[in-house]
Structures are given as structure tokens and as C-alpha cells.
Image (cartoon, rainbow, N blue to C red; front, top):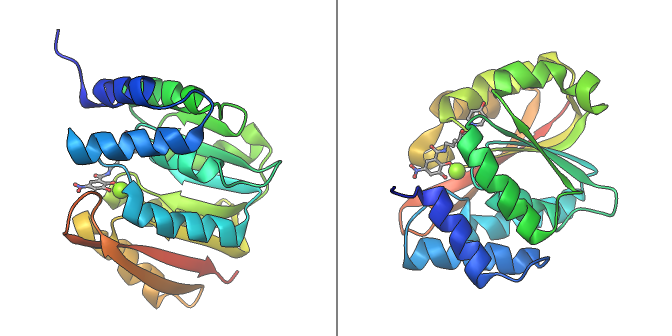
Length: 214
Ligand SMILES: O=C(NC/C=C/[C@H]1O[C@@H](n2ccc(=O)cc2)[C@H](O)[C@@H]1O)c1cc([N+](=O)[O-])cc(O)c1O
Ligand SMILES: [Mg+2]
């Protein structure tokens, strides 16, 4: 039977990356996506911007919306301080199964909590289920029409504190116009656009970094 792209991406990790070496996992996925098959990971160019934001925030608690195959969860987790943790939400159980194996190959199971389900269902339950007070950093990379409703939901559920950082992928391509309009015009956020390119291509894309002002 025909394999899926996430399955082929995992096979490339298991073939080319060193167990327990997260950076080799990141490199193996980027090489697979450049040389074999494009896949919707944040990628190496935008990934460097992600790395610099994670290093600057030095977050104890990270929420990622949209695990996919685990590329950005691994990339974020290997920059976290000793007790730092990331909760990553994945809707598609097949993607989650691949991501778990990518995360395991990187040896980051202790730092990454993968939760299967819809962001809209899980965001209201995170505080009670995972004992999280607020998130220092949220990385949005799931369905583009969910960025805005989920941001409003995070506000309502008290998951953001003064200084919490939202980092959103794909604000140009595929684009998240309603989210950008809201976040750039809201007095409750201070936003900054980091111009880059769509992963593994020359097409323009970028990350929007927004500080919640409380
Ligand atoms: O569409 C894109 N991303 C959607 C991601 C969706 C992922 O988020 C999960 N999810 C998790 C929780 C949910 O509540 C809902 C979905 C889905 O199950 C999927 O694994 C995209 C597309 C392009 N592109 O060039 O076309 C480039 C990108 O960088 C992208 O991120
Ligand atoms: Mg993306």
C-alpha cells in the first residue's frame, strides 16, 4: 500500500538522523524537504527566526498549535531552559503518530507533551488538565482560519499574561488576513513582522511576533 508523506518524512529521519540528537533530526527533515518532497514544516529559514525568538523569550511554558510531524516542536524544545516544556496540539491522529516517533527519535519526549484533538476544544481545558497558569510563548502554525478565534479563546481562558509572546507562521502565505488585521490593530498587542520566505521556496512569507500587553 502507498505510504504517506509524513511516513516518508519519518523514514528519512530514522535513516539520516542520530537518535537523541535533535539538531540532526531538524537537519534530516530540512534535507528531505529540499531534496525529496516539500512539506509544511516552518523550515530552516523561518526556523532561524523561531530559534531567535525562543532564545530571547527563554520560555518555561510554550504552546504550539499544529504539530504536524513535530519539526517545530523539536526545534523549540531543544532551546528550552532545563524545566521548560512545550504542549503541542495536533488534530490528525495519523500526523500525531508520526510526530510522536520524530519526537522520540530526537529524545525529547520529556520536554514535549503532544495532545491529540482540536485547539478549540483543548484550549479551555489546558489550565486544569496540564496545570499551566499562562504561556510565555505560543507558536501558531495550524489551520490559518483558526489563528484568530483561538487567539481570542486564549485571551478569554486567561492563558496569556502581560508579556506573553504570540509567534504566527504563514501570515503572508497561505496568509492569515483576519488574524493580522486583529492583532495589528488591537491596543492589547504590540506586533512586529519578520519578513522571510515560504519554507524551502523563494515565495515571500513571514512570521508575526506579537506581545500581549495585558
Ligand atoms: O496549511 C498549512 N498549515 C496547516 C497546518 C495544519 C496542521 O495543524 C493540525 N491542527 C492541529 C490542531 C487543530 O485544532 C487543527 C489543526 C492539522 O492536523 C495539521 O497537522 C500550511 C500551508 C503552507 N502552504 O504553503 O500551503 C505552508 C505552511 O507553513 C503551513 O503551515
Ligand atoms: Mg506553517
